[in-house]
Image 1 (cartoon, rainbow, N blue to C red):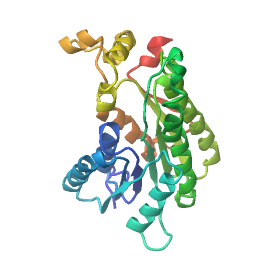
Image 2: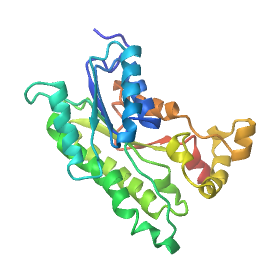
Image 3: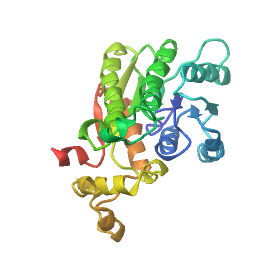
Length: 282
């Protein structure tokens, strides 16, 4: 029998985009809740050393994990989501008895193009929509036979504050995250007997993805951070940047809460994970 703290004991989770940043932090958070089987999905060969290190760390820190499996799949392709499911079946079970209790749609790509730059139609439109929108859609579709039948399942989509804020240059990226939020509400209804479905919407997070954006974009974000209540920490770095970025584990904490039985009455929601940036803009 699990202790009250091990609320995910006996359960299986899949996390996409798991090799670094928010995905890695979510893996640690869910494992700390007694998770039994964990599937970590990554895309690029350059991520393999990171995800292997993550797997070793999780096995060492959480001996209750029976399986920590790594799957290489490009969720931006038609075949990628079905590969995740087929490989999970091969690695975790015999026959067709796979059950996935928790799915975290974290994999995503970003890009900023202003209208005068063609809004990224040539360089970014298909890539961002294929990974950020079609990938989660196909993954959930492929997982339908393997979700719980008692509404104990949990699906959490990692969206973005960009879906609502209208940042310059984010016609495409913001659009993909708004689409993900819309699908969240639809899935909450369609899967009402199977799982709760929610989004969380981080603002700037201290990950390599955000640190790779241009200095110009970071300056563009500065006034938004300055108006974010939880970002107002009095340090020299924060004064220079106008407010601190979130830590990956802070986003993971909100995601982890949504995966527990305590969140069973929350579905179809976009849950604030941006330090109050949203209401600071209203």
